[in-house]
Length: 594
Image (cartoon, rainbow, N blue to C red; front, side, top):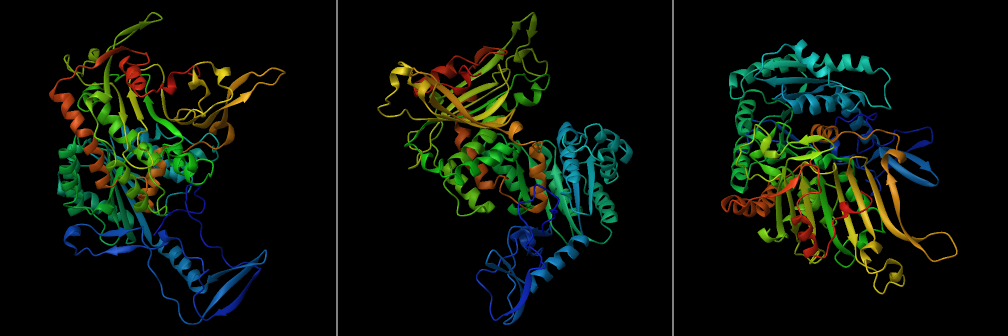
């Protein structure tokens, strides 16, 4: 059952209309093929708790519909608008009424495991409050923080309250809403490997659930080495007895294929795949979700989305700050594992996939997996790694990566990486997908840049001189900051002469939409509550991603490849430019517009 309210702007479905004044009642001898179906999320499919794979968890899977047979004769509401009749059966109306009743008789309990950490305080609790403010959470819900730190309910509320804000465009009753939200937040202290402590949590959850149908969501905001302990204890001592239980797992999902597979096996001792929500917050960003809309709902783009018209695709991620004292964690993973293997590769798969059969989560994820399995193994010769060094600018000394006291002095961990990837299928054969990610660079950005091929026999090539790249059309999808989509085109400058200019057809989100863009965690948390898995990573998808990067990572570490040094605040290692030029490409983020 879906818990989205009609008030919630994030809801992806609408309820069928109720009979209005213009309706009249007729008899139907058989189901009409035009009869509008109920949204699929209205129904739940129960998986038997007696199943061996589900022996500890009560599961309700949200993505399949129950089919209710129609009686031979039944009254339906017929509403006529503009000469078109739409039918809504009386049974549908009863189903909706039952849904409304069941929503009142159910509750969602959200447990943030690792509630004392930065991620929980800065992202998860603020995202939950934003959903509450927008009326996206169910009528009955409870939020529990769980961690080893000793803390009272009041202390948790005080800590959380410092990070809560209302949207710029929605300040009405902000303080009142915060107070209401905080009154639903509680805390329980316990060890992550203690079934007894989770049993105590279960007792508190039941008190707040007050006999209602209980659905439980666990958000694991903890290091991956204790995932299995928490899942084991929660499954045995704190799972829902009569509703669904789901677990959100934060990255990193292992360090390579072997550790990722071991983590998946451990989770699946206590969970089925449909209960595991592997979160990559980049998939919840507005422009990433808009990627498929841009491509599949605009006729102008889909015919161009292939090797015939696209010369290269660039996926760029840069931060203008270093590790800032958090190098201990980063040094264990590096920029390839931290950004490229998950965030950028997920965006690449969404960008390059074939048209899915439907918008169903499994159909979309099936197409993403096909892309990942079609990718050519990464070769060391197509990869450049770097590490930032100290730099002085404007009298300010910026530290090197190795100056971070939490980083080993002989560390070879890359803080920058660029790679050329290829998809060996009919659509993308020969098109280089250039991926670049780095810390302590000259700017902060995340964007997709699609550079189209040169116009054959361009009549105006003399106006561009020998640099035909200046005449190349380019589609830019800026994920962050200052979200935008713009297309670079060539046009004539007004006047008597023939002077050409390069201009942007620009969709600037801040100028076009007054509404503040929701944080990615809001969308992903709402999807997890609703059981929508489209933006979460499936296990075979994860396996394919690690299979692509694991051989490269092992080769870098076994051969102890030294990263190329680049100054803090620069555009990165020189080797990245040579890599791009090897395939006749110029990095788009290094043009004059930046």
